Each structure stands twice: as structure tokens, then as C-alpha cells.
Length: 241
DNA sequence: AACCGGGTCAACCGCGTTTTG
DNA sequence: GCAAAACGCGGTTGACCCGGT
Image 1: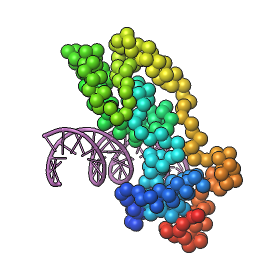
Image 2 (image 1 turned 90 degrees about the vertical axis):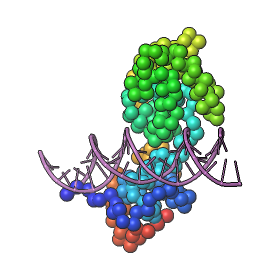
Image 3 (image 1 turned 45 degrees about the vertical axis):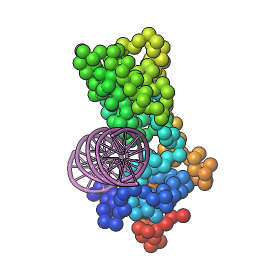
């Protein structure tokens, strides 16, 4: 047979995470890292499924997350990468340190998509929506509007934005900025190595553990821990401190 | 002050891929 | 090689917040 079931849906908590749950998860992952997500909730004393734990960690609790709105450069990079990769949010996120695929996806759907449409650019194809609404002309209005959109965030969020690298019609005053973004995007594209610092990923390196608490407890396999947990009779509510 | 509509984002769902026995 | 489960990803949902009326 294959693997054991991830989690029985019975008795698994859902919905928003509480501070207490966050605390448990952070405490556990920072101390032990994660070997397999299936084991995490049990060992951390959480009534969640591993999937939920993984999502909570990667999208919200990770210590290296930047939080907050995307910067202009990040936003432009997202657009460029989206033009090349499409809705491959995880791949796009991999090029943006401290950003999650969920965050980028949300930002795309709530901000960038609308901006591109306002600019007369199809957010899917990154081509002009129609020939009447040229990117250049619609851009000026879009710039004004999107500035008001972004009052809270950044002051130059639209500078240099053309919608995609396939859509090179930047006005001269934005050319240098665009070129800069293009170079960045191109270098990222050409470079298969992700620029994101992977050290946080908690496929924990030996150094991470030795600095935190000594040798890694996982040793590549956590099944023994589950067995151990079971033997101790901790059960689902067993807290591993 | 209350209501409404739009915006935001955390979390869930479902599916494809990868891994494991 | 196959089947089953874990994993990871992208799409979607729903609760909350905020500004406008």
C-alpha cells in the first residue's frame, strides 16, 4: 500500500487560526522544523490537518515574510513574470523574497489585474485589449486612477509599468525604469536559481538545527516520531514540547 | 448613525504531481 | 509497475474592514 492517510477529517479544526494555535505551530516549527506536514499538527498538539498547518506557515507565520503591500519594483516584476509564466504563482513567488504565492495571487487579482484592464491591457495575454485603447493613451488615465488606488501604499506605483515585457511601448521618461525592471526580470528568468533565500524553508539544514538546538531530530524520517508519539499515548492532543 | 458596496486577504477546496510501499 | 497517500499549486470563497452615501 501507499502512505497512511493525511488526516481523518473528523476532529480536525477548521477556520481562522487562533493566537494559541499560531504559537504552538511557530514554536514547534522553529524548534523542530518540519519533516512531513502530516506529522506536524500531531506533534505540535494541534487539531488541524497538515495541509492547513503548511498553508498557515507558508502564507502567514514564516519569519521571513515581508508583509504589507508589494513595492513598485516587486509589482512590476510580478507583471513581467506573469507575462512569461502565466498563473504560476509559486514560481513567481520564488523570485520575490519574502512573498508568498497566495499573497501575490491576491495582489494580482485585487490590484494588478484591475490596473492592467484600466490601462487597456489584457491581464491574461498582456496584449492590448483592443486597438482603440492603446496602452500609451490609456496608460495616462490609468496612472492617475491607480495612483488614487494606491494612496496608502506607494507614490510611484505605476512608473515604468507597461503591462509586460512583451508590450514594449514605454514612453521615454519611463524607459530607464522599465529597462531596469526588464534587466532584473531577464536575469531572474535566465537564472534558474531562485533568488529567494531558502534557508527558512525548514527542510532544515544541519546548521540551522545545530545553531538552534543541536543535531536535527528528524534525520530524514519522522515516522519513528509518530510511532514514539503513539507509544507515549499522547494521542491527537499530545503536545510535543 | 446606519446601511451598503467594494476591497482585501486568510483559509479552504479540488485537482494534478510526486512519493512511497 | 501499480496503487494509494502526501504534497503542492491554483482557483475560489467568505469574513472582515473601510469609505461613501
